[in-house]
Image (cartoon, rainbow, N blue to C red; front, top):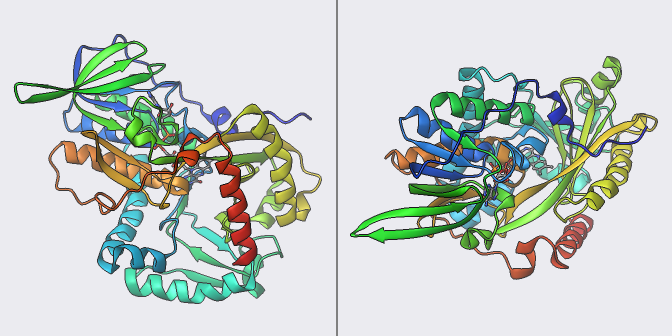
Length: 432
Ligand SMILES: Cc1cc2nc3c(=O)[nH]c(=O)nc-3n(C[C@H](O)[C@H](O)[C@H](O)COP(=O)(O)OP(=O)(O)OC[C@H]3O[C@@H](n4cnc5c(N)ncnc54)[C@H](O)[C@@H]3O)c2cc1C
């Protein structure tokens, strides 16, 4: 069977796509650039609070990373806690960690309130140790997380690992029961409908080409030029993630777009699926160049990783299928004869300091840098930016932290620099 170079999740979406609004109005309270989790969550909150909001999306609603990801709704941040504390101080990191937990509650609440049929489940996540030294560090990490954040992580010694995963290649694991899983394409489709029901106007195939701040007698407004005409807005939210373009060059300079790829197998017999992942966890390994994997609700193995560092193209997607298949068989030799039915790719919004950021840039609100935590984080940040516009106090602990720009080669996502970054991660995996 030939592998479909398509996003498996999209084939599971059963609701009709949200309706695109008609012509752009001349003016609006808030213009949101990008209809992923972040933009749609912001629009939903704004519209619920009576603000006139238009979401401008270059492609279709949810087209970016939000419909293509692993659907893992994860606690914590990408960087290890000691690094975070050293960099930002204990108090700030406590707030950041609390925000990561709150963001999962935020997704759960939206799913419940809006009745979104996306298989949300608090199934927990499992990190598996690729080296003995990684496993040896788990005890200390769990103790630190308990002490600093009063959050429990459970260590799984190698002798008990079969109760969590049907693989013998790892040295042990660490479980966080708070994390969740969902079907991201169904979730983002549900968010679009929810934003629309609340009163937001959504415009697909409407690419923002420039944004100008205009000041007139002390009053300020933004003139947002799009492929479908211009609109003026009192406030603008940039929620364009890894797909941010030179229409907003100041933000573009800050983002490192990194490709990530996923395969999905044919549907597995229930007993095989149960053996691979007895507790249906969201699983990722302890490497820098990591694999992440899970079962889909219909019992396919969905297996992802940075098979290539470049953002997705037809070539990188095709090459990734074989790379990921051999990675998957390395973890699960029992899948050797199982067919891979789908392969697709997407682009992650990394930043140089591997942190999420929010704030204002050229007078516009933005949030980005969610990397592999964007399902929960982008939803939460979107709601928070909307709250700020409505006058809520600013309690986003990532707002105002230093936000370094990406070096020139890394920000285009299409140069010699990304394979070098990939090589660097492989060296780190060898050394650490
Ligand atoms: C393969 C893959 C696997 C991942 N796995 C996970 C995971 O398991 N768990 C997790 O938490 N995170 C994961 N992530 C990350 C997560 O998907 C993202 O962080 C999150 O979706 C970002 O949401 P967003 O709304 O900020 O951006 P996006 O969903 O990328 O949306 C941005 C939108 O902006 C639009 N846009 C850009 N420029 C313009 C413009 N000029 N005019 C109009 N529209 C514009 C784009 O078309 C796009 O639709 C993964 C990402 C990828 C690619």
